[in-house]
Image (tube, rainbow, N blue to C red):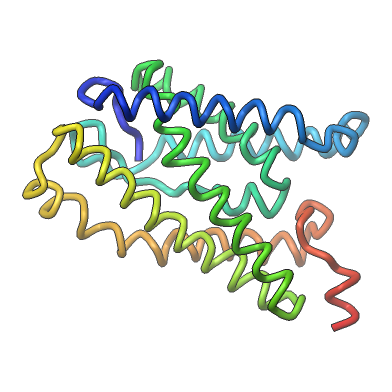
Length: 221
């Protein structure tokens, strides 16, 4: 969803901006730059993935008041590149969306938190759980780390957007209950499916593009 700065409460705008800035600084400082520094192929894949996210975020079902439903694809970015590069790719894509859709510069932070940081860190958390408690294999990775992580992420993100819209009085609870909240669970399956399908296909066709899957551990299990 793309939230317009106009109408959103100051705490959401400022808080979102600070969280986004903190995450961006962390990503720049801790990203494994050595993996892409002299690898033009990896750089091209990263930029292509960023462009795909930008284009996907341009297409969606608009409900008015600046609300647009669209796929997030953050789970795919995390599984392909790790959290830090996922944040950087999301930031580049979101910059384009903010200016293209005229959302307002002040909306950059809160949109980054809702559409990017929340699903990114949910995916990271579930990835850690899977590595610690679950068997390492193709099916667990696709269904748990891709499908389930993406499904949970979009539900949490949309729920947070609901809270932002309601507390800022952009829409009343009655209006949200009619035109927004019913769509939240409906987005879980398609978001999970598209991320699971992409990751499943990449593992079969371009496994070296999925940096977070451990083929050595999978072959031993």
